[in-house]
Length: 507
Ligand SMILES: *[C@@H]1O[C@H](CO)[C@@H](O)[C@H](O)[C@H]1NC(C)=O
Ligand SMILES: *[C@@H]1O[C@H](CO)[C@@H](O)[C@H](O)[C@H]1NC(C)=O
Ligand SMILES: *[C@@H]1O[C@H](CO)[C@@H](O)[C@H](O)[C@H]1NC(C)=O
Ligand SMILES: *[C@@H]1O[C@H](CO)[C@@H](O)[C@H](O)[C@H]1NC(C)=O
Ligand SMILES: *[C@@H]1O[C@H](CO)[C@@H](O)[C@H](O)[C@H]1NC(C)=O
Image (tube, rainbow, N blue to C red; front, top):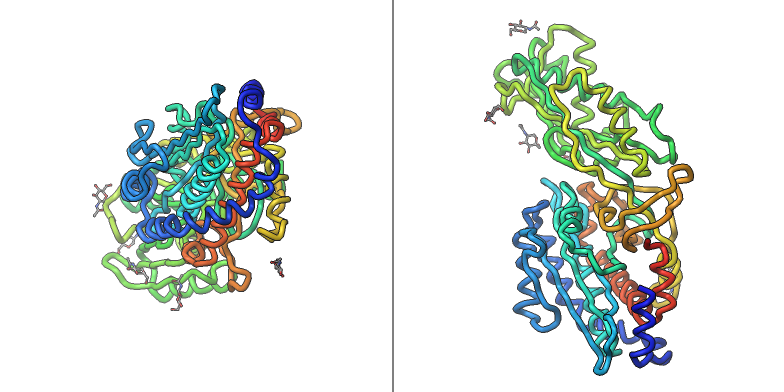
């Protein structure tokens, strides 16, 4: 990279300082022109949520926008890198007489929704941020005649099976050292992300009721696991965070559990007293009804992120199982939706702050659950995403200026996991956990989309976050962040020394 920059400075006319000092005004002007159409695109995506690997409509909306409605801005590649719902936008500007290698710069854009929850993770804003910020940079490259190859990589399937890992293996991030994206959140923060691995536990019974009994015994083991003995690298570590029947990365919004040999009144009373004893259940509702073969409880309530500790319907159903089995050995359980199934699956989401520790968490969970399990299969381990130096400070200082007027901070708390870590590939010192190097610079700040007067500011994956992600305020925050990222991108692309500092971590 440094060699390229020297080549650039020797063969290209250097951008004069006057042009850079007008950058803020220039980007405001460009944004006013391009943002409204892209915001409409993002709202359309929000209104038509598609889950991981099924983002076909969203793919087509983006491809049509740049290939048909606004042709000529970027070279458009649909179905990029063999991924049916990935796309790629490329733009190259070669100033006349410039013979060196073009500088490379990239944006990542996510756009998948959650199973049953729509855009409750706000990825329509990650899409908007990537498209808008890159479009601003593209125009600035033209206006300032910079020698740059600019990329926007559409990155499907963030939530479930690490789409960025497949794109990385297919070479989508090769040759570009710096990648920007931004995630909507209930706070402004530049922070790391956890390492994660999901285990799918299969449980079999000779009968349906034995399978359900085993599944709930296993769920009890998991919620009682705790974290003692796990790598306590941070007080926020919460490695065994939640479990779900059937859906990856989602805490269920509805659980239906049947029971025999117990009266409706006893069940009613049991569930009521569990719920009343713990305010964590305040958002969970339930109804008890008579069904063929017994009584059933239908629990409904907030789904949410697998990393959140708020109690949902699944937890209340597990505690019901705990209480009823303590009450009587005669009570049997069934799933009213399918009371013949003798094979059930549970997902356990294991997380920890550092990649180095994820196998310890995995082994801890595996040894606790293996006795009841027929089999356990593990998905791909997500590495942790680390905060690289230099760019965060540029960003935080920029956001504090009157143009943006936003307070930002650096946080060491890792609030969730992200497949952007497959692009960054961080290398840590095994003793100190200090970041030694990365393969790419990935800058992925979280930005607050909750209006100052909002009654509540939910966490991504909670149903209320979907509401927040659809508000005008969220779109105006995305515009600000897209413009700030564009500002920093143009600074890096015009100042070889800044680019060298930003990429010094790369080995
Ligand atoms: C459970 O309750 C929800 C909310 O009232 C309802 O939509 C759903 O149909 C119920 N499910 C069953 C199986 O009764
Ligand atoms: C629970 O029921 C109350 C009253 O019927 C309702 O206002 C609330 O929205 C319900 N909550 C959920 C999570 O369904
Ligand atoms: C539950 O009740 C059924 C009759 O409804 C009976 O056949 C069965 O043995 C009982 N189960 C247990 C575990 O006592
Ligand atoms: C019930 O479960 C069995 C076994 O998994 C499956 O073959 C069957 O299709 C399910 N039936 C319904 C109605 O879901
Ligand atoms: C910056 O934001 C604060 C509230 O966060 C507000 O009080 C202040 O007036 C704003 N300043 C400018 C220059 O917009």
